[in-house]
Image (cartoon, rainbow over all chains, first blue to last red; front, side, top):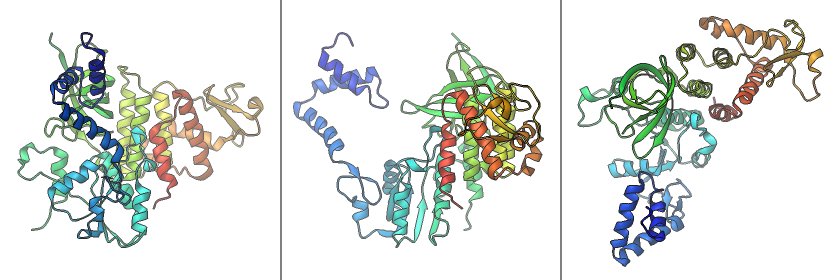
Length: 199
Length: 257
């Protein structure tokens, strides 16, 4: 990096702070930016600043949004009586992409991780309870990841909702569509047998 | 240069994200003690590393390394037991996480101690079968301290050496790693005494058969005394609080059914 002028060195150093970007990739990206049109570079810089300036958490579901309330919570055609609880906004985006769900969401922004010191106080569970206590909720779908952290979070939410007279469901676990059973891991296969369904 | 491959049974203690798809895994093996290794592409893996690096799971790991002190390169890993009975119970998951956390904190890297491996294995099996009780927690702590060389001296006064006597009050001093009788301790008003009953329960828990732990009812003041003593000792030894213990307490304070 010694051979580069100071502003390029600075750009490489900033880019290499991004996840998955090492010094070599950062140098390649910096060279690409140098060669790009002024207009494109300006758009890139503006979009980065815009994201930081304009994006906040939805007042209702804590999804990332530009307005006070996100477009999903705002959409009256969706079933406002169902909340799907997810760990992160990208999980919500994945469910939305599937096109099979038409209720609302609640984003926890994490999962219980005792070994990392992430407890209930670090998750947006109080906001979820406030929504539920506000009335009108008939079902809560827990869509946290099917790993130790996600399962522990699901168990905690189930305990918190005990006695609330709300249907609580957990997303299914099992073999993926189009998959080949001989390549499915042991744990997933045993879960798929445990949660088999009648036809 | 070729690297020799090793195969060992190991408990997964901790995983750390490294780059886009790799994981740095800390595991406690029966033959090599605590080790850290890199699992390339583990986060995206759907076959080789699918569901294997879950905290406190017992696995069979194949790894290689250039030097004994180098980061291991994890070549393959398969699950032996992922303790489903623990994973489907919140309290048990918290306790098992605490066991893994303590094991990690009290184990220097590369030091083989089969007793630590067996202790973790036995207590996870017990946790799978029985309810997670205060006695299970305290007896694990005590036994781990014992097998890692930090056993507190509880059967006599650290100063006058007079053996533990029923009915007397004692004071525990983390810095000295033992109890003192009232006469030797000369306690300040704010210091909480430790009853001989609490000390005796802990002494019992050091060697008691695993099957009998479920019969020990450690509750109320006795449980609080034992907890205070052991947790303060562990915090003193490590110079920090155990994260998983803090999370467990946060959840207990919620008073959930």
